[in-house]
Length: 428
Ligand code: ATP
Ligand code: MG
Image 1 (cartoon, protein in one colour):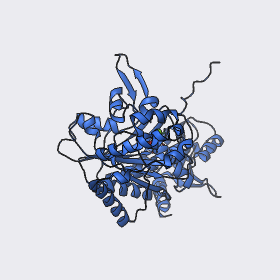
Image 2: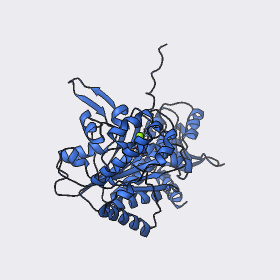
Image 3: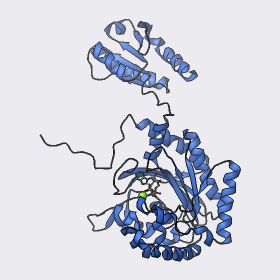
Image 4: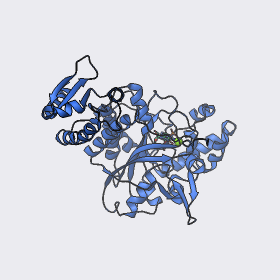
């Protein structure tokens, strides 16, 4: 027999035992975003490779070694998106959304990076991302962070740490960059191969290394705050004071730099200690330079992206959510006539009771085998229709999760019986 084809390493199926957590998370996030006035955009999953090279930057882990790039049949170089910001800016520019206006946009979907798969790190993973455009001040940075804090609250996630830093303006960063190059050049023997290469191209990236062997040399590096000008300092302080007033705790982490080239000023991450090494569940910041980098007019921008797999893992770890019932009732149908009549009865019930989750047995079989399926479905009630019930226009009712005898009801009382059952459930 031929060997079964399996999913690609690092790319996972989402199965029914997990999907309720994803749906819970997605629904809550969507709700909170709407409450802050965010509007959804959906971009293609594939873009021209150049879009990512120009936005993320050639000297990055993503562009250097993580992209799924291929030539299509026309000979164009295309890439499965490794993140959503580039495509979002491309779409906003292409459709004139950035012209003399502010925007609050969000997107969600799969991203692709050829990384080493491990817990919390996959080759296909999912993000919900938010991007705002046209707002230069610290107010929007602060609002964004407050919104993420509200998100965790609505999701029942406690214990995340907010880390905050500022990367200053491009001019301030240029001075700092020179200082960093001086420092790291003096400690070159402690740098790994990647970092030695980055010393020439983008030394800030070295601070972002995941190599534990370099922790010490990174810890000794100069920090940017000494090079901040008044405006950058004020921008950052305003954000901090809004967070203070709102009671959102944070730690300033002067070594927090984002892996991507286009950030300026504010950067932040929400980190959990529940998931081991892959602790960042949400990361974002200001990227005022990106829109011009992609050919648009100077447009301030701030955003963030959340890793859905990691947030779902946190939800699972905390075990807070009550997973929804798959089925309230299971309609057992024995005999050909009952099977046919059952489909019609089920349709009527669903029409009358929109809150009802009703599984109607399909595929025939004995009472016994159907009851087994009813039990496995998680339903609380079995509704039983056989030839006898059909003949007497009644329906059998048996509770599956508690000791009880089967009772019979006239079929025309079934809808009000189930309505009452649902009513009681919502009161519980
Ligand atoms: P990391 O430092 O963990 O590699 P990153 O800086 O590359 O993250 P971003 O590009 O900022 O990540 O993406 C935002 C969020 O998306 C991350 O904080 C994380 O939650 C999630 N994420 C990034 N890469 C992966 C991945 N390979 N698998 C699962 N989630 C990921
Ligand atoms: Mg990464």
